[in-house]
Image (cartoon, rainbow, N blue to C red):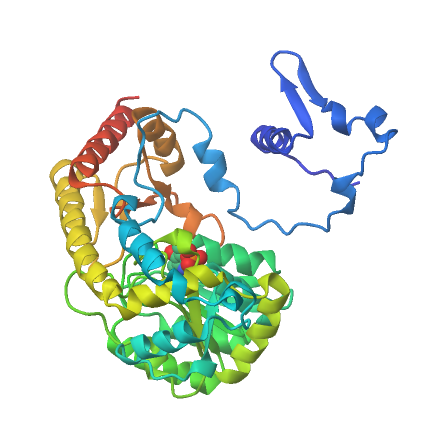
Length: 442
Ligand code: PMP
């Protein structure tokens, strides 16, 4: 007989998981009981047994990490340096209401009905023009409007990945992408972090595993804030073309630069038709619009259109119509200029505060754009434990493990500087310093 040893923590976590799902209730000092609604007696009534009907869930490795870490000890005035969001105080709500008021009468009743799956035609056109000015030459039939770029990640994985296929990522990377790939059964190969792009390892993966897809965020990567340089971009395209490798370029942050403009996107260099380009209005404008877009080869877009049709027929018309006006009337360009100034300042304040109070304990690079500072702690402290301490002190961050396909070194974490003003950022960093200090004494 095979004997498996399960640690006490694993068992406790499993029970907690069942408790969260409402399957059991844990009574302190007494034991764990199957919830009434799932106990045998209740099966005798007519209630449908959902857990037996649902298909098996492929659990992405880090899916519950964040929610588990965030459950306890959350103070009311907690300062979130975790979520990667724009500052809601700068959402241009007044302009959106004005556009709505001024132009509503111009809409026809049919504009409130269904539109083609690929999106509201004028917005599709506006996006091709906008991209043209960023060096991406494309026609309307290469563009599809999406309900956020997360939908683009999911649809791309849906049409390319079969269980067991290999996908390459640059570790660490956006958790939401890793989860999508893993949930569809992909085997994720990680390119390690290094100063220069690890071409040798990539080529080794390409010859050994024949992966279909490389996922990357070349500009102001979430979570590291790093930028792939122009030479590396060229070399990557050449290599991908040679190996018939599709590249999924996720680009939410390239317009949020605080120094020089970043190098041209991979899509702008794409001469083999293999780059699937994704972007979104969630970071530069408002995530609640739920609007993003994909630019890719017409054959690929055609298949994405078929797949999107199954999911939601098309993205919300009203959001698309308002966004199109917002861009055409020049508001987006002005908003970007304003937000770059605001975020640049916040980045400066956060990096200066970290340098002043935590210089000997942390190492980090100053990001040239985006929302994030990626820190490595030089002390012997577990980041998961530090987060528990920080939550008690009233500040949060994301432990680095969340951005890897498999648990790794527990020494990194991500801070986000976009959401709060300078005063709150300073208080947040001071709380972080306090929690690190407390930890050392204990
Ligand atoms: N990609 C990256 C790299 C992100 O950081 C995010 C947001 N956290 C997304 C995709 C998803 O954004 P949305 O669906 O809101 O467009």
